[in-house]
Each structure stands twice: as C-alpha cells, then as structure tokens.
Length: 236
Ligand SMILES: Nc1ncnc2c1ncn2[C@@H]1O[C@H](COP(=O)(O)OP(=O)(O)O)[C@@H](O)[C@H]1O
Ligand SMILES: [Mg+2]
Image (cartoon, rainbow, N blue to C red; front, side):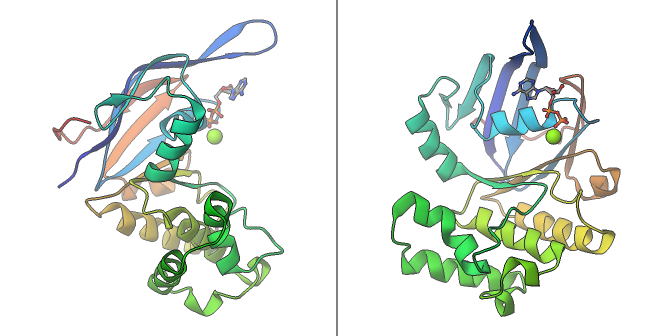
C-alpha cells in the first residue's frame, strides 16, 4: 500500500543575495507518497532544485516543518540528518557524475565505501543484481566513457538505489539525454516508482516527461500553483 514518505508543512526558504533576503520558496505544503512517480515542474529559477534539496534533507528550510515517521526533522542536527538521508533517499542529478577513473561497479560502491570502509558482500551482490535488472551487467567493469550517456545515467540510478531508498530524488535527470536514452531512463524510474516501498520525485522543466507522472506538481516563483492530488490518505 502506498504511504506518506515525507511531509512538508508551511515550508519557506530565503536566500541572502548579498544585499537582502529573498524568498525562494513560499508556504510549501506537500506530502510525498511511495508507489508514485511525482513530477515537480516549473521554469528555470522557480525553486525546483531548492525544493528537492530540502526534501532530501540537504538544505534546511528557513521556516516550516518536515515530517518523517511522525517526527519533525526540520531542526535535526547534521549527524542525525545524515543518518536519515542515507536511510531514506537516493539522489540522481542532471549529469551522471560518475568518476572517470573508476569503473562502473567501483563508482556504484563508492558511496558505500565512504560510509563504512569495507563494502560488504551483501552490498556487492545487491549492486550486481540491480545491474542485471537494468541490463547493464555486461558493463560492470567498463569505464564510464565506454558507456552511452543514457547508460551512465542508469548506472547513477543503480548507485542511488544501493541503500534501498524510500524516495529516489532526481534533479533533471533526462535534460542532458537524447529522446531514446531519456525514454529508457524514464521507463526505469517509472518502474522503480511503482514499488509500494518506494517513490520517485523528479524535478524538471522538460514537458516531454509529463506523461510519465502519477502526480504533477507545478511551481512558479517558489509557490505551488498546481497539484494534481491523487486523494490518498495516511499519516507520515
Ligand atoms: N545558495 C543560494 N544562494 C542564493 N540564491 C540561491 C541559492 N540557491 C538558489 N538560489 C536562487 O533561488 C532561485 C531558485 O533556484 P533553484 O531552486 O535552483 O531553481 P530551479 O531549480 O527551479 O532552476 C534562483 O533565483 C536562484 O538564483
Ligand atoms: Mg534546478
């Protein structure tokens, strides 16, 4: 069953531009569900990346509450946030950002080795399993430059999946891709989002991806102007 993964109540974010404070997000109220492909769309500069970064507990809000498992985590300290981040989220960015000097499997295992030193066989097996599932197992020892841009982005998704995240948070993951690679990446994300234990949130300004959304949220000037709510209940 679909459930609330995270809830934002009256979230605002201001940035200091050198002279004054500017409101970049205003009064954001939002619950994100598992088993859903949520797309947050809006023009460049509307606050999409800021919102995704706040959802991912990388950036703290200037005001408001962030509820995970009935707890307000908005003012948690960095150590506790790091634990929550690792447990809850996987991140995928516009460019796959694989390290060119490392092969595919070492790129995928890198975050795990930074976290815990020696990478367990369990994690390695899981990486192999996801690579197989993604049709990338033949590239396990390949270098990033031997992969197409779409394959690189899918390897970055494998890396983001390694901790079994509840939410996969993606920032314009298809905007550097051609139509064909973009379709494959979107189908991969869509499939991952249909698991009841997981949801996908993707921010984008690319209308080509809209048909994949289970839920569409539009933001403009830091405010939600449209949300095709699916009428699901449940508390975070
Ligand atoms: N760290 C920051 N300091 C100051 N201004 C910022 C910072 N991050 C983003 N902004 C500003 O906030 C606005 C929204 O940015 P962003 O969330 O990156 O938008 P989008 O991802 O929709 O293009 C932009 O005007 C941007 O310049
Ligand atoms: Mg952005």
